[in-house]
Image (cartoon, rainbow, N blue to C red; front, side, top):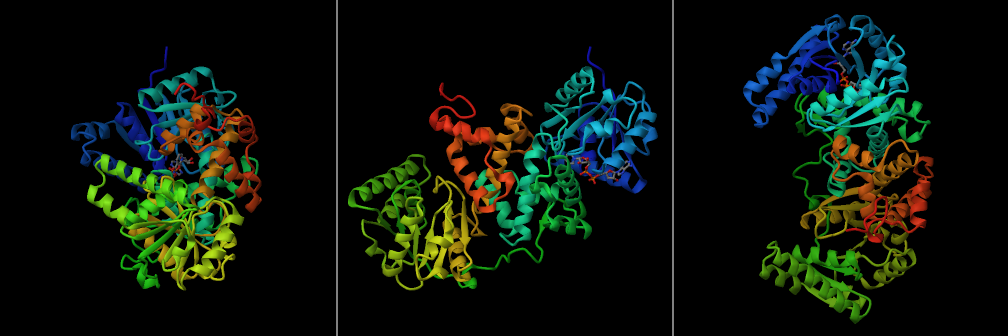
Length: 596
Ligand SMILES: NC(=O)c1ccc[n+]([C@@H]2O[C@H](COP(=O)([O-])OP(=O)(O)OC[C@H]3O[C@@H](n4cnc5c(N)ncnc54)[C@H](O)[C@@H]3O)[C@@H](O)[C@H]2O)c1
């Protein structure tokens, strides 16, 4: 018979502990909530009150239920108050010696049959357990932030955790309305092992001025549909906690340099910039503990218009190419009111392209998203051409031809001769260095990357890539144009993968490595990222959609440019591609799609 948990203890009422108290109390379980001092206890109580008041204000919790919830929580300073609980969850700072000390004391204070659990993110549950005389009753129960919201719990069993203890804790998770994945004791478990390399990489981008914090966060939200950008997430996690997690993962997880905390992180922690909890981290918050971001000296000025930055006036745009991206881009510009000159290679291709744009606009009308008159006006603004000569008087050229350097270089050399002075020349390349393309013309200062996402009419993000030769005016022009298209333009330097692919694909590759190492299953890994981190798709779902061959090609580029050993493509990914398991398009990738 499953064990009854009628009273549980929570040690440490910080970011995680206060949320964990709420989870238990909400589900009818009595909680003894313990802190190290009176002021810390008061902070924990205040966090719980704020959170439940917010739930009431949002209509998610009845007033009577909130009061009952608070009635179930008993606050106390010191571990002695935990003498008769059935289970303790420890959520103190991420330091092994501190946790071991607390577990040794819990072992003395608590009833012999009580289960002792840690919410550690990266430390060894096994090492914590041996500080007690009951390692078989020690387990990891890893909640996600914010605990009342995120559905996932990682249940971590060590080699000595008793199977009944695992089963009892799994049943408890179900009672709390959570979804659990049970795994072995490895640094970072599933979610953090896949998350923290990515978060650290994003911090490195800030540190090296590769892109601005707002741009990095916007890129991952708009480009990948993530609920938060990586820097906002770091602030939520707490930079001190994130630092400790990275440091432990580096030391425990095979000294992967990608987990070595970026120096900026340590500096921020030392300076007291801990994220939301201290009111300031990568962003500045209304007050400590508040989720509301307020402007600071690094916030781009609201009044800052593109023109003020020296942006040029763009009215007429040339789009070169006739593939998927060119089709979408022609439509996007025409709908936004620009005069568009579409140049394809040959009259036949031009006619096909014209049909494709028309069909897409018709779909917009059929779906009620576009008025017929607006469709006609958009079509009326496009002229269809099969020669570059018609680009002589455009203000901006967007190149979207085949992804081959020699072809793009030849095109830019021609544009150099045809286009008027002051034109901005943009390439949509997703993998070639923009500078290589720029140097094929005699005006590299006017060349930028404009990396649209597929499908261009739908995706709200464009990466604006500035090379070391791009002028600030050209960058400002490109960014301003994105805004007029109703898209967010994020500016970044000219490195493989720009922002989105550089941050996304190593994470996908890591998921493949985790699967290859048989640490977990594709289903559990997908679950963990969706329910623990709020991702719209798990890594294997996404890989099957993107195409394994595409993912492998991007990962290879990243590896070749940065020579980062951790970026080496997962052998399993290479093998699947070789075997022709390319994802949905091949009806088989990580999963079998043949029945769809
Ligand atoms: N922050 C996250 O997003 C997150 C997510 C999942 C798990 N975790 C893990 O949860 C644990 C707690 O992290 P956090 O971010 O909540 O830390 P935190 O710094 O926000 O809170 C820690 C709390 O522990 C209290 N404390 C310190 N020593 C204590 C003692 N001897 N007795 C009782 N209380 C004591 C502190 O006063 C503080 O309130 C860590 O192991 C962390 O890795 C964190």
